[in-house]
Length: 124
Image (cartoon, rainbow, N blue to C red; front, side, top):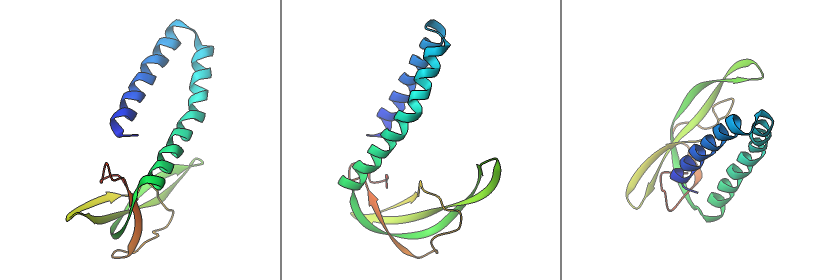
């Protein structure tokens, strides 16, 4: 599922939720809102499965690690996102992993295996 359709879906969902809240009552609003907490992870997992099943495997080189603050369980901590570069048909792409780690997992210059979307090469 591409980003445009995800954004359009999010906007439509927001409009529907506003309509439900103001015209149908809070009970239905919160029922739909609660149901979305089940639906959205399923959509996320299906998107990941599609990338894993249809994506192109490639080697990438870790070029840096972005450090970010996170809040989990009411406690602040640090998380690390690897940034990698990879080559597709002579063009070099750089992307940050959407998966973080509590400690830096990779060293700069380390070669890692990634999967990228052949329709959207920037998506890995």
